[in-house]
Image (cartoon, rainbow, N blue to C red):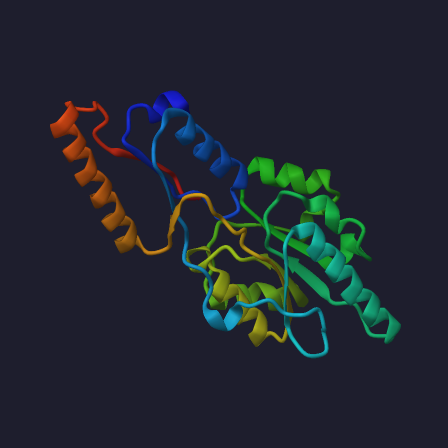
Length: 239
């Protein structure tokens, strides 16, 4: 990565908001070769869907957690509360991908009640199978999905709980939450990681302005010291 970046004047990291390892590698490589690194993030969810919510299932339908492991613990507590009230456990629709599936295995009737929507790739299916997920509970499709298609899937699986993560508007987060609310579901969501240490942009126009400023500085430096030999910016591809 460092060798590749030496051919550029700056790097734009536009990878997925939850691709933390890739982002860390990009930042480290930029620091190593002395390049500015800009972060372009998907826009966050609509304000109506955001905000930390205390874990009280009787007063809200939206709960946020810092990690998938914390979410599973919260979901377990939610289900224990239902059992104490002699209420049936709902089906759970999981849309957080094929990584870290093991934390769901400790939940009651995992094999029967949980449905997992993952990418239609061989690796995703293998990870699901390795976690003990049955084929009938795997939905392998490429998103993002419309509100209507989300609603149809939730109703088809008789889901009462949605497990998701704050992937941003371009990732279909708003459509998922809106569909879940139409179906009367509880929503358990992993917060988007807080990023710092470099310039972060959610608006493409603001990013373009910053790139223009960097280009103007490069021209000034070139006129003063000679051509740098690094004529443009590289970008991490968004997924």
